[in-house]
Image 1: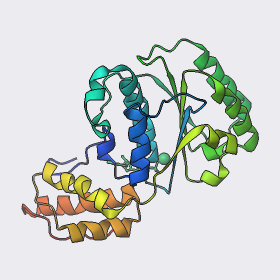
Image 2 (image 1 turned 30 degrees about the vertical axis):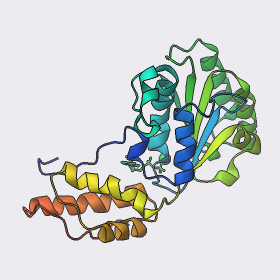
Image 3 (image 1 turned 90 degrees about the horizontal axis):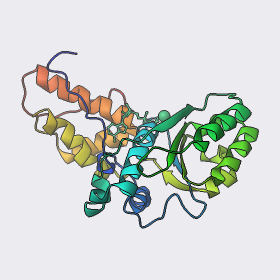
Image 4 (image 1 turned 30 degrees about the horizontal axis):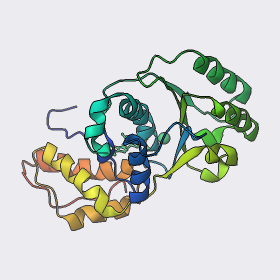
Length: 246
Ligand SMILES: Nc1ncnc2c1ncn2[C@@H]1O[C@H](COP(=O)(O)OP(=O)(O)O)[C@@H](O)[C@H]1O
Ligand SMILES: [Mg+2]
């Protein structure tokens, strides 16, 4: 990577994500502890949406944010969207590949979560990426272990329809699809200001968001490319963003 390459900072808190208002509200309610979680049989979070909407990125971040919210008193004197991971909990990751043996997966999770959790909040965190790839039988087995105490399941899927109703019922469901373009603007402007560039107009940025149809991957590629072009041309401001990827 050359010295004039612009990079996007990896998100660290909810503010770094462009989210639909309702999705943000649900996640903030968990982090400000107004929604007891995990509790009352609700121990899952399902992040659903199209490709590239930031599901896996958010899923990897949530254990740290939830563990911190539950165990670091300092987190409760700031806005929930600004909470960052101060406790660095351990989380188990399962990429739910097509045709995964469900019995084996369930057994593995069962064994792991039987141990005492050393995380500050005493919760185990289980991340299940692309959980819709599990067969119906595998999902049924997995659902049975959702009744455990002190286990948080964070799941992602492109297809909410393919998720077992019982799993959905035990989960907070978060729609990651196309937030209003306005929610993207501060995040995209920051890519430019972090690189010491004057951002393009809001209208230009809104066009990039609309063209990207909610895919963070596509939107960030376009934004970063325009920033790099400006840097290489020795400009201090960006006026145009080409829609190459979106
Ligand atoms: N809010 C965000 N801020 C910065 N980068 C993001 C954000 N959301 C997603 N990304 C980036 O976009 C890409 C796609 O995100 P990913 O989580 O893999 O999407 P999905 O799992 O929904 O397909 C990744 O490279 C990720 O780092
Ligand atoms: Mg993903």
